[in-house]
Image 1 (spheres, rainbow, N blue to C red):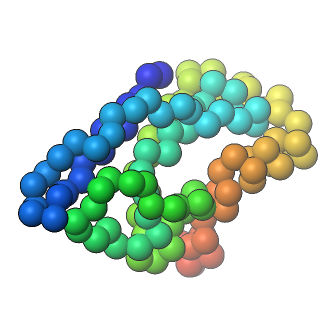
Image 2: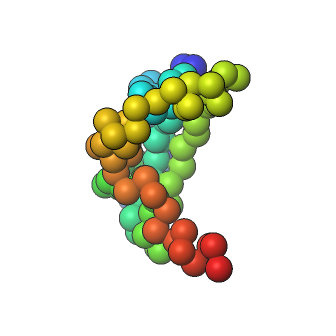
Length: 112
């Protein structure tokens, strides 16, 4: 899937401007063949204006309490069959490398 990220910024005078229009390469994983994860935008804190549109650092897949993430993913129709055939050891290592902290930090709270 071809995905683009179009980013706007704001000048000191408050005028909205386009600052970036670029393709976003998908993150793919051997554990999930055919899946594509696109990390489009995010921040670990509340955005501040004015902004030049530079992407703030957001290294982990899930945000901290004051942060956010915006992305999308696609799931192929044959997803169930592929996952059952995966070698889990290397696949989990790849997952942790490509999608750092991809486990949900709130999972314990959500399960209660």
